[in-house]
Length: 124
Image (cartoon, rainbow, N blue to C red; front, side, top):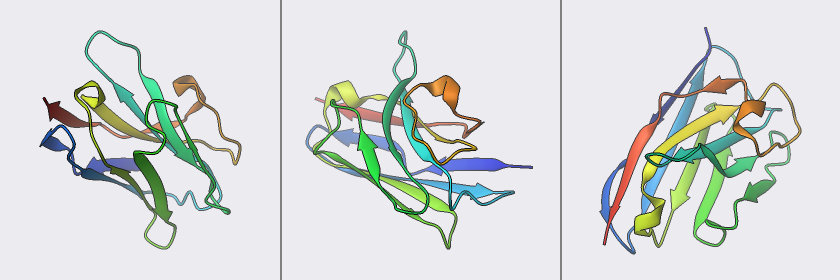
């Protein structure tokens, strides 16, 4: 059974930082795309960023580019999201996801596996 488990969410003041982790179990994703999505109340789940498997190339939404950094440790089957200079509009539930593919896609429906989500709240 494949599981993705996020951790590291919490409450932080604007301008602060948080680091989210996503630990995968049940299979490895070393050659496949993993991504981070977020969903604010009343809004659709949106793409935040993704990372390819073998090369570790990263892709980001414009709203987080320059502030968020995705990395992965394939030996630990874990992906990370370093979030700096957080803003109140970053407040959302953050989900990690994985695709059964090495090609990056930006739509949440393109991802096959999901974590349960972790809440990130940024106060002004």
